[in-house]
Structures are given as C-alpha cells and as structure tokens.
Length: 256
Image 1 (cartoon, rainbow, N blue to C red):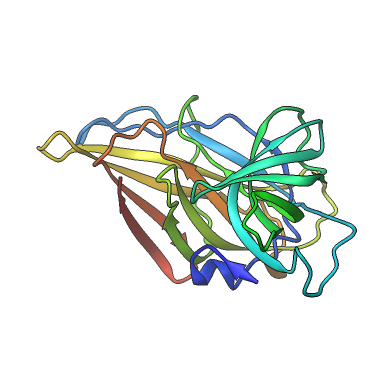
Image 2 (spheres, helix red, strand yellow):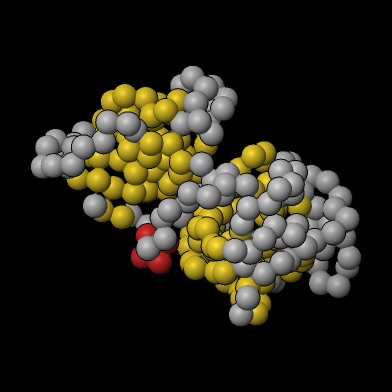
C-alpha cells in the first residue's frame, strides 16, 4: 500500500470513533497589529465519532486494483451519501469506477475533505476503486463574536502544509469515552489572535487551536485529522499555530 502523506500521519489512520455531527460556522479571533485587542471569532467543529465510508466488495490479490493508496483529498458527492470523484492534494484527479457510498456526505453535489483509501489501475488510469473515505474536520476563520476560547489539552502527532498549499493539516489524538448525555460533545476550532506586519508587505498570522473537552470522559484516544484552509491568506504570509498539548504549549510555523 502506498501512503502519500507524512509518515507520522500515516502511522495513525484509524478515524473510527469520532464523528462530525455538525460543522458550525467558523468564527475568528482577530487582533489587529501588535497590542490592539479585537473581536474574538472562531469556527467550531462538533465531535462525536468520525465516520468512515467503506466499499463492501474489497478484495486483496494481485489484480488490476492490487495497488492501494491513501491520500488527503477534496471529494465531490454525486447524490447524497455517495462520492463520485476526488482531487488529491498532489493535484491528481480521481474518478470512482463505482460511486463510493458515504454516510457522512449528506448533501448532493457538494465537496468534502477526506482521507481516501483507494485502488489504482496498474496502467495509470485515473479511474480508481474507492475503498474507504474518512472524514477530515475543516475549521475555518470568519464570522461571529465568541464568549470563550477553551484550550483543553490534546495530543499532537503531526502538522504539514498540503502539497497544493491550500491547507495546513494537523494530526491529533483526542481522548474520549462513552457518556450518557448525548448532547455532551467535544468541540474543535481555531482562532486568530494577532496579525503582525513584517515590514516587507507580508504578515504573520498567529492562530490558536481550540478544544473543549466538555466533560466527555477521557478513557481512550482516537485519531482526528484537521484541515485549516489557507484561502484568505496572501502568498508569503507566515502562519503560526499554537496548540495546547498534555506536554505543554507547542507551536508550528508555516510560510505560504
């Protein structure tokens, strides 16, 4: 099997327990220049057990589909709960021979971020056989004032910029467990704390990953992938992301 994403991310590819129940509007935290306090805005993603879609007729063996790959993609649905094609972060266009049934892709003719497992034709055709698609959380920056910005700790695994420059991606481990209160869900989001002019026309954007444990039990860990879109940032801008982990504050920096 060919994994086409960073090694650390590839080692943890079982998004089995968290499910995105609802993606809320992204709010953002804005502090203009250095020292001026602005509006706190952010985007929340509500977590409960990330779903995966799988093909029911997967077979192994050295046939025309015996080479499996895993890619982060933007997939498009045909009908509701059915994926028809996808574009990888490397820019490869994929067409599914048979539409991939996908319970979390609930809207027809829409795009979704996913970690896609698929078989490729030995001859190099872009027609592929979808095996499974695991949902990737997308947290964005705009829209409403936020009363609190929780940063409950989680475990960090990896961070990387997509090959096409469209996303900063995070591989995280979130501790979770069963709760009798179905309304109690963890939340993930992102805020922008500051924008600093660098003097050469570029700007540094300092972002902060948000996480609300919301008293969900921490009995075991589950893997979560998060993508932060870079649309709205300018070429040359510097993106700094602060992440609160069980080992303390961790910072990752990317240049567009």
